[in-house]
Length: 357
Ligand SMILES: *Cc1c(COP(=O)(O)O)cnc(C)c1O
Image (cartoon, rainbow, N blue to C red; front, side, top):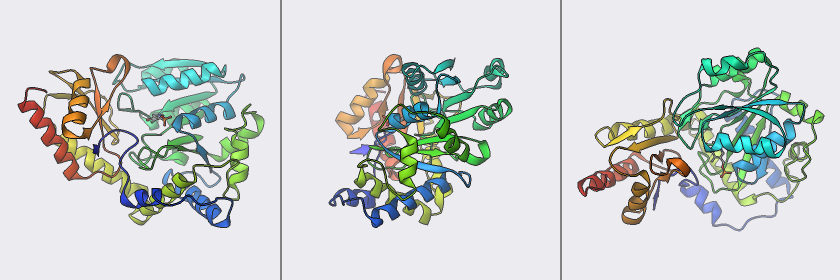
């Protein structure tokens, strides 16, 4: 299987070898040391400020999206949510369920966020801004400088889901004044699913004390308190956290987040060059390095996913809902190489010869 989806993605050999080992008991100084190192490297790669902290949650990315909302917002807040696709919509649903007053900025598929769209929200008493910096469903990467300026000017608390963007695109948490950054184990961290990570600025850590999460499992005060000694309140996905540790250390050794991002950017660039002659249209106005969203000009998008999977053993990422036959996505995260890109391009060219593209 050759996997070009956006998660779970291909893991390298080191990560897979850890997956084959027995899972150790975790209330030990050894595991605490691993967790403290995970926190240090996450802070470094997110370019977080001095007083920032990290919570490792057992649960997929959505658990951390919900944790961020319930721990840091309540009925006193008025949130703006950028809703450009299914992940923006998920934040709307989370806020609605937890009765957080919210207004959406709804974007058409593939459209970027502009200054003009933010203008009506200036000085209107909004207290929180929630955005998926890379709306993975449509492959649109929003302008963080624009969002950061807006939030700074209006004194707004900024929550950023960078789940599919972290390590694929540069993230400057402290410089942008981001208060909460979320990522997950199965995207560019290229580990199995099951762990999500929340990086909190010093301001977000202080804010926790004036909010009540109303939830035992996703309580961030208790996650951070336990995290001070490298522990978690409950049994975490121990094996996945060990894999994350190996991955973070390997990235550090190879030059840090900058080098990892450059590698993903080069793979994306290579793929985008090589599809120039194929009957596809790139549908995003602003691309992340993580994904290329493609609209096939001649055939339905879902059939490409099916044929590649069943006849070539290659997985790309189908879209759901209204876009099922409009868009499919090719991911550039995980253990992929330029040769893998060539394999996918050859398969697509073969499909074209067979009249399937
Ligand atoms: C993958 C992803 C998530 C998390 O989804 P889970 O299935 O809960 O891991 C959230 N937001 C974005 C932007 C994503 O790409």
